Image 1 (cartoon, one colour):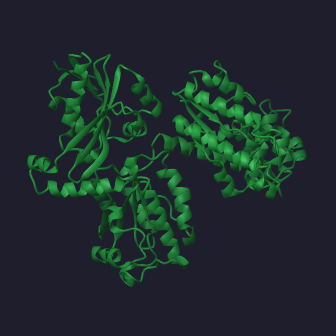
Image 2 (cartoon, chains in turn yellow, green; image 1 turned 90 degrees about the vertical axis):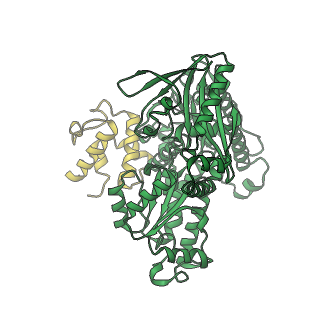
Image 3 (tube, one colour; image 1 turned 30 degrees about the horizontal axis):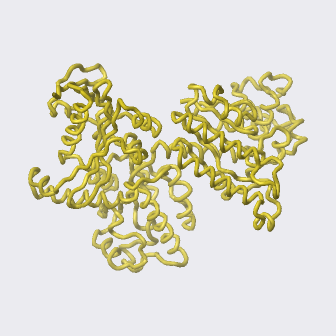
Length: 76
Length: 533
């Protein structure tokens, strides 16, 4: 995971959750952030697809529930 | 104004795209129940705008060939119609039926009398009929988006199976834009005048270099792009948009194009004002504003030259100046897709819209006559005829449009939507008086309006199109108003002037009409009274 990718994902997650960017760390995940529920996960993935032009499959949307896992989906 | 979003699937991701609207999402799949129940969020006074953005495939349920109209669709149409009738005070926005996933049987779908495709067409016919009889229902045609972007880009299968979300973010974004544009068009927030450059905008090439027959305007190649652009402009003109020209050219050369080039789709009489000169364009645009008696905030300016665009933007920030397409083949579609929906959209067309150019041309002829005669002789010469209609229900669209669009000769500038006008029409304590103006040059259509409140003996609204200012027609409207007040047993009439930054010319109107000033507020609002027995 590159720092640049993690930074892009952190910003996107914070924007979707409506939180200040600093509050989402590189280790943030669905478990650690209360606002990051299953509906938020879908919204994050919808925005992720559009922003980075990737097409996520069902399995990935269901499991990529942390900044690290989402960032790993981007080319380094 | 608060908005409630109802659906039969998960449309929650749309909320973020609908900003700055304040949108609350209804319960999941609550659309039908919410529309039917007399006590529901949709029925509560809290929400004045209701979005019914449903998924056609899900609403069709398991209905397939030979099963007739799917029951759920039927229930939805009945619920929607009665909701719109029950709540004339609310604006309801619904999408058209558009099945995006269920039409896999190509040939049977075309030919079978009860195929999904046929069902979709029939359902849309019923939906349109409901919108025709309920003016508070706005339809957005989602099929347009599928045609433009394609199903593969707009539908997301993974999200559908994971969370009942049908669309990708691209669709949510486009749908939100469509909904915003429909609401703007419904509220008549479109612009009135389209000002066009000539060289490399209305035709290809430089007129001064190639001459009137050398410009690119043809049925083939690049010349066809400009001809198609002119066709699109002509179509917009028929919806009530006024066309004008602002070009740096010799006026004689431009005249020659109109006289001699048979490939022009637009003719001289299609333009309400032609400014061909070597002045700065901002100066010419101000001339157009003065000639038409309209503010520059109702103008759109199209020019291929980025420097001219920038100069106009700087000098006249109220004028909308869209970017110009970089590829000429995109000119007609750019205009119809980008410029029209954003700036020139109309939700319904009135008879006045369709004749607008002719009316402004007559205005210009009268103006020329007025400069040769003194006012009394001019007015006599015009042979003015005023026809009053009291509570003309069939003109409701035009009446709402007038309250929303009239800025200069408007004493209170109260903006009303169709459903509010409906309440005035239904009330015995109110009268909506519409003036139709005619003179020897022709009819201007409905151009004057006053709304009277008999219970309070008060003139709620008093306004007139700027086209007939200076012909003492206002005296006649006021006379008609007093006559109606007397007939309702009022012995005195109250009237107000509420200042805006555009209606200064009528600040002293009631003073000149024999009214007595009773009070003047800090914000400039003035209350008047006149005894009328």
